[in-house]
Image (cartoon, rainbow, N blue to C red; front, side, top):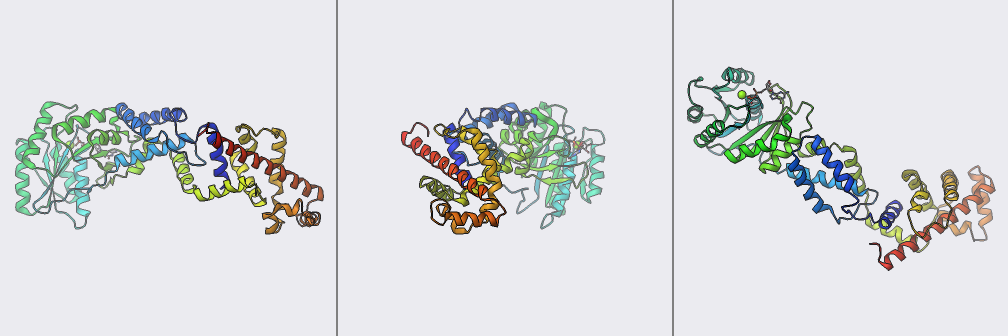
Length: 445
Ligand code: GDP
Ligand code: MG
């Protein structure tokens, strides 16, 4: 498309055809702000930005797109791939019960998540037979809470009361599961307000005796900046296999997801989207990336532009310009460009070596051009392709008269269309000469 050719020419002349540190400086700041607003940990933000910068600098800019917009798309892709490791959603052992151990701070949503997972497992194909294990003996009424949730999800709950050690409960529960034919054991554990040694030691012991297939960290989406430290502490102590981000139904933008993923290298597997047991959703990295960046409009715009890039067409159009074969069909396309880009005059202003035409004159020509499309539609295809039939050919006068009449215009108007066209064609050739010079002298790459 002509638009792509012109756009990239202008970019080249402004030195904006490649992503440089300079032309994305402001966008990087915006992206940083957006991620911090979404509660992504500062260190994580800096790491991601560094990575994206390394990848993006020097990349050719897509026609019709600003370097900054393209950078946002690159960041989006980076976030998506960072959060989107394709792994089995929930481990499933061939033989013997699959063990899923839940961990996290108090109030994170572990007990709720245990019940949600139980329901999810029962709906899998083939359905699983789940045993829920009440291994939180500290929090008052923690066992009762799990029992209520067990009833709601029609899942058996294993408990030894609150006087046994969680380690023993876990061990016994798995033996029980084996004997009674449960194929999945979900262990709900205790949490503390803050990370402490006693909690971690106990969790390690439970892990040792239960040999879990999954150790899932439940993280409250509202945790914010702290999510990174939290993840590091749990991952260093017990080694997590993934995470569940709870309370995503709140107004959090989910930056914790990125922190958890970046710090542990393990995927977010599910998100909690409400208090009820069915409010569990599979984690979708694309959605989360959009939510974190909050720049959805830009993203879809860049995607469209990317689709539009058609190198062949651009080359064709450039060639046409070089050969000065600009015709009335291009003229119509031109009108569209003028409409979509604001003003051709504005674009021309950016190009050195072209200001032979006065700005005001150009704008007037543009206006008339927009009004002239009706007249161009009255031309035959042949006339549109070969403008000289209306300019130098000896039939030019009679053709113009026919076109004017057919489109309800005067001969004056038809003649001014021709003069506007000539002006535009001159500009096109000035532009193409400019391109040749630029490339030949090599000062602008
Ligand atoms: P635990 O201490 O880690 O076991 O946390 P709980 O499962 O007891 O949950 C703590 C509170 O958070 C309860 O009031 C839950 O109803 C609530 N909760 C858990 N998950 C979600 C969720 O995804 N969305 C909302 N809105 N509330 C949740
Ligand atoms: Mg609990």
